[in-house]
Image (cartoon, rainbow, N blue to C red; front, side, top):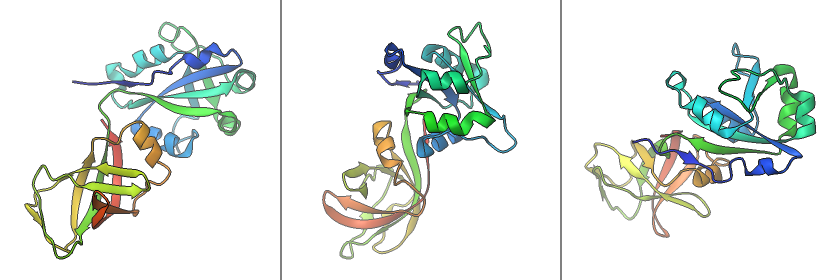
Length: 229
């Protein structure tokens, strides 16, 4: 079953006539780039323009069409109306779907567009989200070994106030003291707000502590990660 995350604040900002909310359906690679850098970029050898809709529901309908299987999320962009009027190309694309209108930002205007953005928000993802990571883990507490298996779920500390339980996906029945293991970890509770809180520090190579409450039981090094349904 697909469960869609939709931000309750979608479209509420349009009540302010001085600002405009734009919506763009994006794939996972573009989504990660946008949420990390808070701006849009042109992919080498890709399209030299960015297309936006003026209506969330119309964008959601577009994103859920079978042909758009690579679409992972919808982002909302808030920008001043007068600025958009100078930077936007208002050629109406797919008018029978996007009845509220579309805006095209040509490549030569993208830098100015990015600089004018007031806020970028992730407002929709068509699935149950989680952070999936590959990491090297090592348990270091007083010569203690840990039983593994499919339900082994320690706590990982990414930073102050950022402790999350994670299910280790591995065939290991036991983790030997001070021995490194490369494993996959699924963080079911890292979604939406939690993921946005982690984004500024989340990067391959970062160190993470493994804990039982406040007690440190091991260390981990993040090798790579994805944010997926």
